[in-house]
Image (cartoon, rainbow, N blue to C red):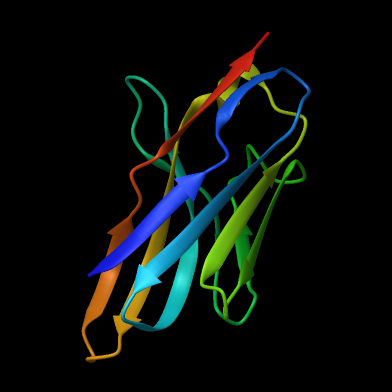
Length: 121
């Protein structure tokens, strides 16, 4: 079994910062793309930021310049540093990973349980 566990969400005032963490566990051989998505009430889940094992990154236009994604391949962890938070950043943030297990099984879409981010104005 492969699991992703997020932490670091919470309540913050507009303009503040939060850092989300995601740890992958299980019989993992490698993780290709790993990143963050979010879903606000009544909205579709959307990409926030992703990174490849080689270090390439992609950000949503709405967070570019404010959020930074980073990862440690050896620790199988990814982080999202969120600065200058806005009320419209409030959502449940989900970690996502494309995983190859030790037995050769590919799980292209592993999701964490989500962590709530609330931004007060």
